[in-house]
Image 1 (tube, rainbow, N blue to C red):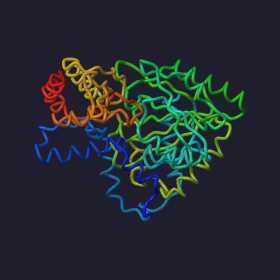
Image 2 (image 1 turned 90 degrees about the vertical axis):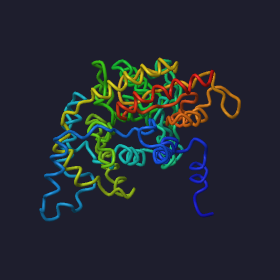
Image 3 (image 1 turned 120 degrees about the vertical axis):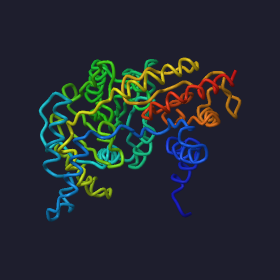
Length: 404
């Protein structure tokens, strides 16, 4: 048998890689119909340019001819880059943080994989509020673990009681993503405090303290005066994993980091483990050039008001079309409910995969909710041009009218 049975089964399943599949479908449709005729809301690929400071830093560093400038560095990253990320995290979390807490990562995805490899034993689980980022399942499975999805409340806030009921001796961590992909929900200070209390109570009872992992690549993109609540002050065994893909619009450069709470009882051991797993997973180190770039520009100011404008424009279109949706508080995704009038190929209402295929007839590309642990929903990424959003109005209205 040429490939792993698990990989073969997973990559050929109906819901596998739904985001990328739609993105690739969009490339084909644009060649056929033209870019302006296709409304591609499939992929969270930020279309804002990086801030000027970032472009200037790239230009400056690209000219450097210093010997070994592009050579290896410690697996944890350049000391100055780790120090810069410590300053960033201290500002966000409201507690002192030093560079010994930081491991530079190959984007947030690479950082999560290094962290999961460090903490998971065979048969362990990671609990996540659902809906959640589609790839978490694979990341956990990579290291012999499993993902346990706990549905959120109706407003997509954390169901702490549900998470308490799911905690076991095998729970290595609880993973939260705020602002959330795909719902845009921003968890409140009380959400974090209640979750921390539940995890501390569980640790007292069972003797194993789960880590609280904060996946925060969208932290800076919030609306209407909201702020992302810190966890370091209320839970010692917390870990930030993030990247510069969304806030600085650098998804293709694969630069991020892990930062362990300095109050974590096993901080030094966990950091050392993440450094080791970064090496043995083959990442070796985060991209050197972009460690230098983000060390210089991590606090560059970006204007996210365009995302809010696009959120409001897409909201108006969906409301006019009659599509039920969540109201995003952050990130750049609209989480929408499949109309009850839609019947999929099975004859059942609410089939999100079939509904996204239906939308393709109107040249609208969306990601099915099943891939995010949210059957009956679909995701629209509105990090696209304002022109594309406004021009999609008639297509959305026609698609829903034709159902009737």
